[in-house]
Length: 282
Length: 282
Image (tube, rainbow over all chains, first blue to last red; front, side, top):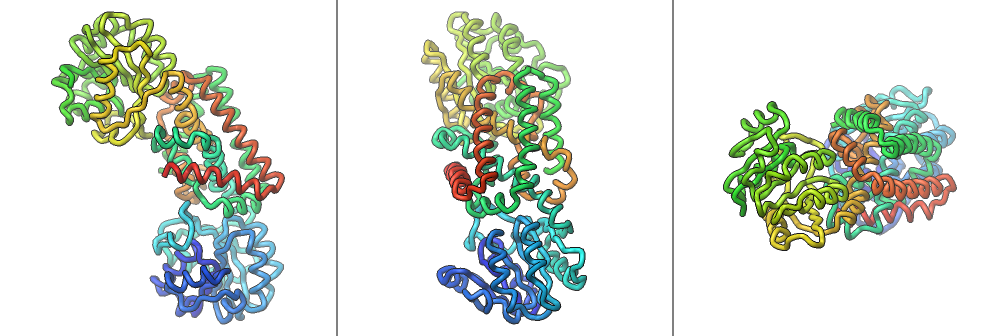
């Protein structure tokens, strides 16, 4: 499918991509870029890449596909360092959880003939981050959202879809604004709430480990995610996250009133609505 | 261990108790009480009880152990119907999620010589309720909280501990007030939050089923629990639930401010505290 793919940032997603691209034979050769020599060394030992670079410019030279897998807030600086070194016809994408700001910056920067940036958000993470948790099946049967600009090159768009589909993903297409709104409520809000719950009971850690059941454990599972990564996501998608949070606070106010006023029927109705949503997702 | 055990209410917990008591041989005979003839018929067909009654008084006659497995709000009326029919020396317990009100009522009602009520809360539920989801291993390695009054009969207390331990449970002892406070934050609050999140995104059910990942699914899993049961729990433990919710709202306010004010360092600290709690429970 590609002659040479560059994976920038061999964390959980980047490293899993290396494994999956290798296994499916989607590229003749894979170049990995890592920021530090230490990570580069680890990637050389653990991942089936053909070459590992610490110089971003060097890592993209000659590639017809570049996938940026670094935290969202680092992307614009990555863009600047690689833009002048991309091969003609190169397709650049990313795996970030926020798209609006990134896609705007890409639109300004990537102007070379034939070079396209199309945002991707493969929704396949885990609270277990890092190269050591990478696995080839991470993407299988999971959704991925791609956010092409209206004037994007059709050939590249098709290629990108085909790429994610080759990894077993179901591809959805949204504008970057729609994407940020949707993931604010379906991904960022749940994370924020899960983290706030963990924060709330963090003083009771001992009791919780003795007395809590699977319910609490499931509800707070995602709060175990990388704090720096998630702080970046919340900052980058600030307006949409705060707007989703407002909706959630309205729901909290509603259930609080129902409990306070002993409105048993209203309380059951409220809970039932949640039950229906839960069942529709299980 | 017992001559005759009565299980009142063959829902998920009650029916699982019947299976577990039978398997471990903890009683010579098991009597099941069901409110409706329909449920009684189902219990006769599906559960290894020796007798199924729809008259509560009849169901407890001759038993040395009675376990009430009905919703918390029905307990006082159950108490009244059985109190005059309990055998001398009978140990009565329950499996309810709220203890304060129930234990107070029991203290007033159960005054016959040798009869004890000691509250139990085996923390082993599931969002999949009902007899049909019962399983013998439901209690294994899970915690149970018992809430004896200070003047309770030592012999009965030991017997109750031994009973839950025989099912593989780890027994903790708290006052009924402590219990209600602890479960408000470790069980009722997570359920409330999970339900409020499901309620918030219930308008986006279709998008959610297409685009959400395991994170959202885990965070809302418990919101699938029986609405009537949980409305009862929130009502019965109202003061403690509202107090825990207040703590959670404070946390939400805090993270909202951190995001609004672009306090990146504070935000990471906040998230990190939650991460530590999550890791300590996993």
